[in-house]
Image (cartoon, rainbow, N blue to C red):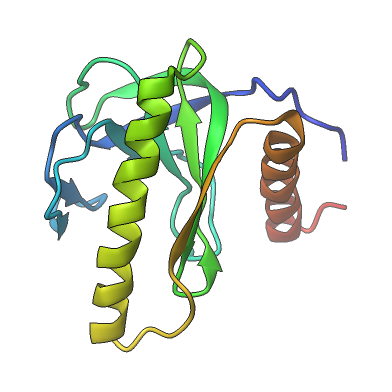
Amino acid sequence: MAKMDVRKRVEVLIDVPRFGFVKHDDRGAVDCVSLLPCPFNYGSIPGTCSQEGDRFDAIVLGPRLARGTRVELPVIAVARFTDAGKEDPKWICGENAMTAFQRLTIVGFFMIYARIKAFMNAIKRRSGATRFDGVRASVADLDRLWNRDSAQDDDATGDT
């Protein structure tokens, strides 16, 4: 398997505009109403599949984008998140490096979100740890993210 460029550009489909509260599913139905406004654009990466079976989540830095907008941006970091025992990384995308304020905003949001999500998982009787493990922007972390995604694609298609 060939190694991918760590500044890989991906297409992101915006599900929640910056400062939005409501996440919709692919059919347009309400999937989740957040207690907190999302301080960044939040979406997913078409053509990918996480351990949960959904597309990988993505954070898009920058100005507010409308729900349904598709943008192509480089991945600059990853927010490490575990949901009910399954890895659920959030790919952080933007044309420029994260500012200290953007990093602090992402960390603060996911520290609170992890507690809310753990509580909701307990109500739904979903076992396994739910936690936020920080933001990583190293070449090694991004390389692992690419190679895991490529390995899942290979497993799904039978390629080796």
